[in-house]
Amino acid sequence: MSNPDFQDIKNYKPSKNEEFMNPKQLSHFKKKLTIWRNQLVNDAKSTINHIQEDSNKVADIIDRATLEEEFALEFRTRDRERKLINKIDKTLHEIELGNYGYCKTCGAIISLLRLEARPTASECIDCKTIAEKKEI
Ligand SMILES: [Zn+2]
Image 1 (cartoon, rainbow, N blue to C red):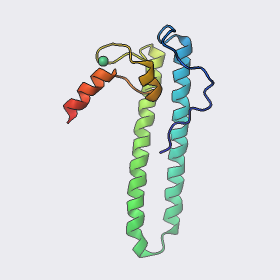
Image 2: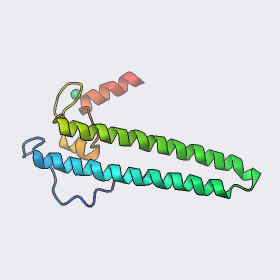
Image 3: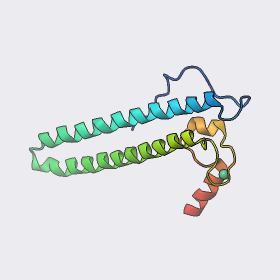
Image 4: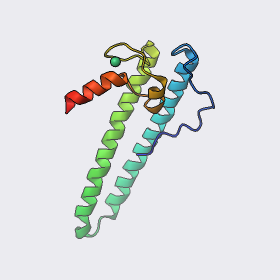
């Protein structure tokens, strides 16, 4: 899975000095999420093509096991991509609703730094840390 390519986002950087989630910031994150989503959709397409090409090539029985392993891996990748796309869709919906950037657990502002690194973040770092500790 390739990392999001945010290069085509213009030089605008959300700043702490601006009002949190002003229209400019919202459109920045919306753009970022949309670019990321498009990229994932493209990746997913190429995964499917790859699987189809490989299926056509299966001639050698010895290669089958290897190929099946490879398919399993690609399907897992595809599954991850699909989940991520869902999450991005949910996040884009949050932007529409005006909830974006606020922790779903405690309601605190999620730092811009965190959102830049992880635009799908729906929890502040504190709540996320607590949740992760519970998982262990
Ligand atoms: Zn929180």
